[in-house]
Length: 103
Image 1 (cartoon, rainbow, N blue to C red):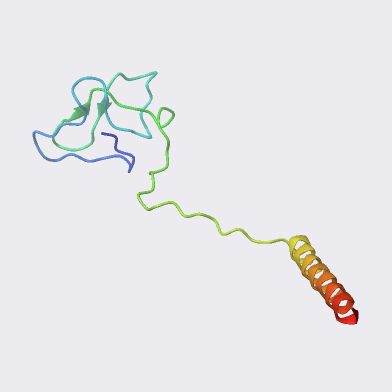
Image 2 (image 1 turned 180 degrees about the vertical axis):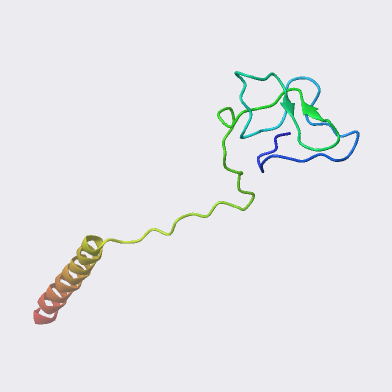
């Protein structure tokens, strides 16, 4: 329903530039304060009766690709915490092993 790719040129015939009710295309050079419809360049003399401005809709084309989940990365502090925790667990296991072997 919305042309988010830019302006157009119409040299053809029988082209429709709006839905006939209330929704037209996005025109980056349309000024709603000075015009009520958008005249489309070309020999066809076409008009968009319900033009939209770039302030009414986002200017970026929505992506059709599936969203990607960012891969979490650990900071150097997180890595040191993991290393210290592993050393601590190994140390406790060694102490328990030595105590059991002495009995």
